[in-house]
Structures are given as C-alpha cells and as structure tokens.
Image 1 (cartoon, protein in one colour):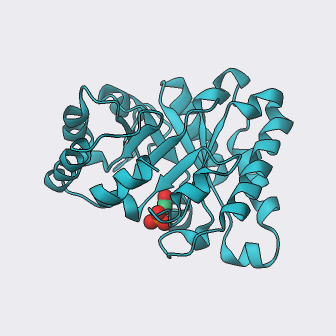
Image 2 (image 1 turned 60 degrees about the vertical axis):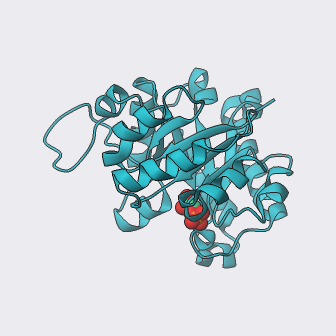
Length: 247
Ligand code: PGA
C-alpha cells in the first residue's frame, strides 16, 4: 500500500505572518491520518513554519534548491542549508522553474541526486504543454522527462522519491485533466519507472497536480494509480486545503 501524499505548493505566496496564520488555521482541524501532508513553503518561511508544525504530523518542503553544497551562486540555496532547517521534501523541476528559469532535465537530474545524497526527498515534476498534448506527444514528452530526471538514480532510492504529474495547461487555469486522463498518464509514468526499476514501480508514489480543488479531489484519489496531489491555489486557503486532506 502506498501512503497518499498531499502537498501544498505555496509558490511565491505568504509572508511569515501570513504563513503562520494559515498553518494555525490548518492545525485547528482534525486531519486524515492516513494521508502524509507536506507544506512546500518559500525559503523565508521555512524556519518559522517548521517551529509551528513541531509536534504535528505535517512535513515541510522547499520549492527548489541548487545541487551544489556551497559556492559562488548568488541568490541560490543549498541542500545543507535546507537540511539544517529540517526540510523533508523539495519540489524539483516544477514547470514554472522549467519555463521561467530555464531549468533543464539535466539540472533536475543533478538536483535529484543531490537531494537524495542529503536525505531530502525529491518531488520531481513532469508534464506536457497544451501544444504537446494537442500534438499527441504528451507521453513521449513525459517519458523523456522521467528518463532524463532519473538517470543515475539508484534503485535503493526510488521509494524515497515522489513524482508529480502536472500537465502545464492545467496549472492555475482551473482546467483539470479528467480523473481518467490523469490516471492514464500516471499509470504510464509508473510503467516507465517499471522499465527502469522493475517492481519498484509499485512502491513509488505519483501525484497529480493542476487545479486540484475540493470538488475534484475525491474523484482523482479514487483512481487506481493516483497517490496524491500537488496543490497550488487551493493550498493557500486553510478550509480548502483541509478538505483536500480529508477527501
Ligand atoms: P494549481 O498549481 O493547483 O494552482 O493549479 C499546482 C502546481 O503548480 O503545483
């Protein structure tokens, strides 16, 4: 059995004060204990949010990191810096990073290896653009992202990684892939992991992301291969996020 994982991706939202208010509101609810809950917060929020979730089952994630431990990389944050703050997860290769900051599959792969080496669990994002889907190239694109992202990753580390399938056209647009289409792609991703790692494909958790809301979460979570959600907009509101966790 794969433990469902629902992760909030706050993106570039929430000052410390706003973030603490949100976490306080989430903590005021009873949360589904069968779900692993992760908050992926801006770097500046990590320390105070970590303190505020102390003693709860909520885990902490970052949204990006550099692959080097230290060096002349102005504006970047290293894995040891995140580790020191008690970060459990890091989102890698989010489409916004690929699109606006030119992150390549090679960068994502270096970050994957570095995260694993530092004991931080990667949530690696993959997904096709609208143009690629309309050209029926979505599987080819996603498969290439998986193969390049996982290059050189040891099979012993597969269980520690999470994949988020996020069709770019569904992110922040209010358009969701149908639960069946999302499941079909996620099953395809699982098969791709099977080609690389055999039976470990049944251990790796694969989330869906892209306009996940309280009104579509249960249908998504009822699918055979969808193990959770990576949530942007709906994770910024406590009531909505709690509804997702308690789907
Ligand atoms: P969304 O974002 O839920 O606002 O569509 C998802 C994501 O980008 O991870």
